[in-house]
Image 1 (tube, rainbow, N blue to C red):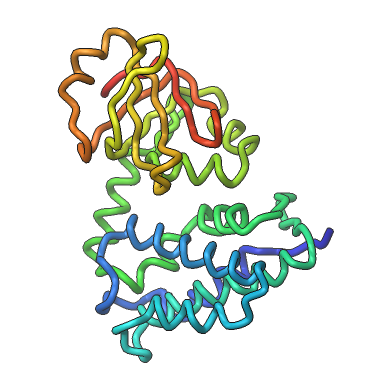
Image 2 (image 1 turned 90 degrees about the vertical axis):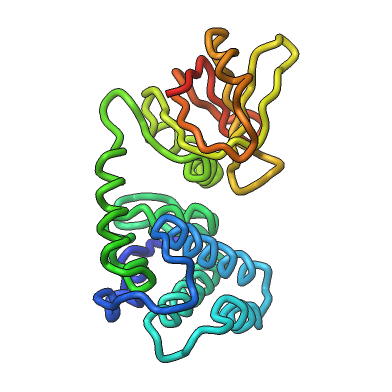
Length: 251
């Protein structure tokens, strides 16, 4: 097992162009862009672990198709993929331990660790969006910040959190109520006739499953697939590889 300080290594490729504005080639929504960068890092890492020596070049070509090479957007995408590849090469040698004693033993875990660090959004995403959009995103995130009683997140972020490390996910939530914002994938009932709302997680086979209180049945009957909603659950756990909430109510 080796010690490896991930954060400075992660941030270095992005620092030189953090002051840039938006260019073409990426949908200009900070949350979308941040999730896209996470995906690129993880995929690049996983392909490297599989031993595909050409995966880095192929992925860069696919992800930057139609983009100009001398733009900051291109550089950000390129560097995210290169970082993922380097992380994969390091993981091939074994687990890594960060300066704050976090053990990283998977691509998903490594990506989650570096992308949840302070200022990742501003440093890595800034070159891909215009200043007004980034400022708006900052404002929204401050409104939706978690507190001592409620852990606020999105369905996709919750799924990623549990996928990276179930123990760490439970520790981060810390027994608090969980408020989830997401898109309805399905409205159904389980074998005990409880209403189950499934939210899109990025994996259609493993949606976030939320068991609603009986008092919410009338509201659930009016839901439509694709509708964006906010639900708060008393308890959250991993069940059959997907986050599962109980005693949930609509906000």
